[in-house]
Image (cartoon, rainbow, N blue to C red; front, side):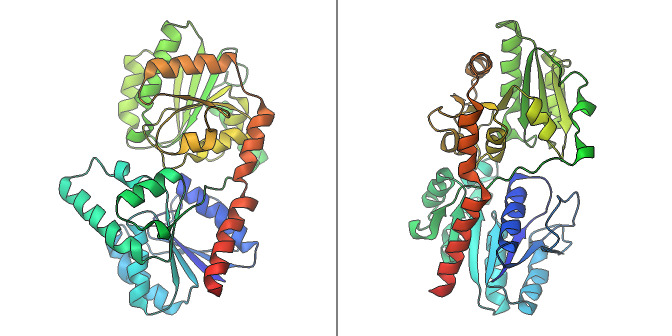
Length: 368
């Protein structure tokens, strides 16, 4: 079975990590796997050497169309799997015009209605029209959560096209010479207060201002000492630095930037905190479960409740409510959940289970 995944890049984001894990699984199950990247290969994550990486070296999605079509004309893939709008549509049209018969899968990793709600009215009309028209021509659309599936239905995608498969997570041990946490905070490991970890790109939907306000309340109202490490980079970094100064949190909140190996951070944390307004899935929550860490997360669309249940596997609190977030952090620190229960939940997302669902779906479609 010959499979290619389409991605914008191979950097350290959640969708990219999912495809790396899934590709590795498929290679180990006798599939010929390629990953076609539209952009240049910058800061790419480590991959199985048996996975072919093809870079189109383009800066924009539209400029990738002709190189992609030409590539698909030269190579016959059984499955072309596009990830995230508009790359999904690009793969569909390029495949159609390559005149090679392939099954076209989409994997949608986010709630599109939320992801682009800041764009202009015209942009959103184009977005919604393109989804309603093109998505229904796909062979199958994999949604990484029920929230993503519900959103696509509202946008006009037929329910029969949608299949929910939660994301796989595969925690790999950090190489011995890459245990980075002590580079960032010399007293992180031995700190006696609350050690709080957050991992995620510095984007608006992550709502780190919500976290900073909650931490200020945790300090001023609950008289707690803490260190909050945030691993990730992104467009909100400058404004977040100013907010940290405004709340006088320079000694408590540390923006680490992009961190490739996070094992040391997870293992030495007391709590993992996610303060988002919305998520497509929330892979970092599953990673935290894998390290047996008690989680505090906002009950946002759409991942946290699907992963954590009704607070059986973590503490859920209201979206954009610093008071509730601070209260939940304090409660979680005093009443940590059993690591055994958390690890058992983590196993539900093992690649051996999730990968089998993908493989079975493709084998069934090939035999029909």
